[in-house]
Length: 203
Image (cartoon, rainbow, N blue to C red; front, top):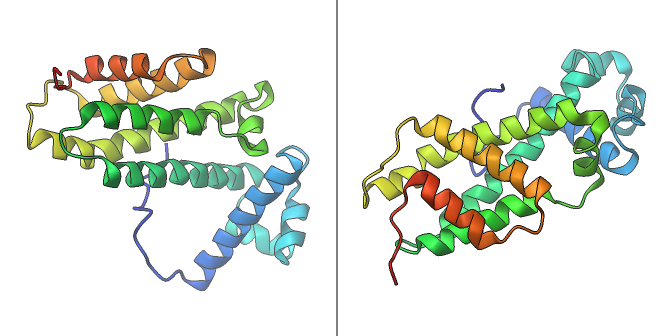
C-alpha cells in the first residue's frame, strides 16, 4: 500500500530530480499505452527519455518499481476526477451525487485504453488487484476527509468503521461492474445509499 496521495490540485515547483523522475514515469505510461507493458523494456524507456540505463537505475530499482509508479498516476487520475465530482455536487441532491459517482466509477472501470486493458488481463491480474486496492484506499481516504465531513454537518453519520466500509464498498462496486457491465446505475446507487445509510429525499 502506498502512502497518502497528494492533493491533485496542489501546486509545487518540482526539483530537477523530481521532474526527471516524473518524466520517466510519464514516458513509461506512454510506451505502455503504445506497445504494452510486456513489450516495453527499460532500454526503450531510457532511449525515449534520452538518458542512460545507469541513470534510469538512479531513479528506479527495476521495471516493477517503475510500473508501480505508473499505476500511481492512474490512481491519481481517479482522485482528480473525484475531486471535480466533489466540487460539482450540490447540497441536498444526494441522488444526483450518487448517480454521478457511479458513472465516474464506471468510466474508470471501463476506460478504453491499452494500458487499462493490459492491467485487466489475466497476465497482469496481480497488478490489476494492486491497482484497484490503491484506488479503494485513496478514494476511501478522500471521501472521509471531504464528502463525509460535508454530509456530517447536515446529517447523522450512521455507520462505524468509515474507512473499512468505504474500502469494501468501492472494491465491491468495481468488481460488480466488471462482472455485470449492464447493471443499472440506479440500482448501484441504491446499494451505495443503503450500505452507507444515507438520508435521501422522499419525493
